Image (cartoon, rainbow, N blue to C red; front, side):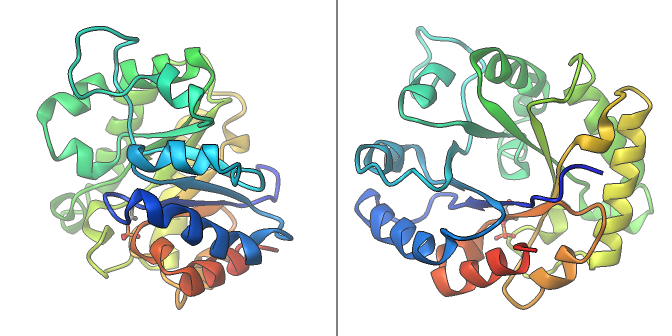
Length: 249
Ligand code: PEP
């Protein structure tokens, strides 16, 4: 099993204004400071400079929600790994299902993005998870193992990878996987990775999908659930703090 320290990731998606980032983070940090879990906050790109410049990033890690597969150059509208590092980011989310659904190309370039992020020194929060059709036809394990093989198996080790299992049918829908369903999939992911990686037992596997203050403690009890990736509820400090508390043991 990985070290007992849990990880809680806030994915703000395309919410809040840059000027609202500082008070939101400050409110969360007031309660977080003494906690025994790692907190990673992933605001929109436009908020990163504000959070960094205000020197409020001590106490938690700053992450981005995506990055370009290219190092630099003529890629209008894209953001590079170096830009993220320059702004104080330590982590980047890659493979979020909302991005995978935007274009077919995203699925193809994920391995490239992961390699570049790691080469530059960013830690990767890699997202995987099945769609509703696969779950209903009991093909969820095949779906997820194919994602792992396509996206990660070019890597020699998983040292700087955090995995977030996020069933697509549970993201932003209010419908959560049960803690038993999540635990079963996390155990399956660990088992699958062990066929290729000797230290797969050290990889942190987070659950994501409509995690709320009311259900977080159920996930926190499970052996293979090493934390959570939280979207909607991370924007409500009182709820998010309760989620952090649930993962504080
Ligand atoms: C997410 O952003 O990955 C997510 C799980 O969102 P939500 O918690 O809103 O379902």
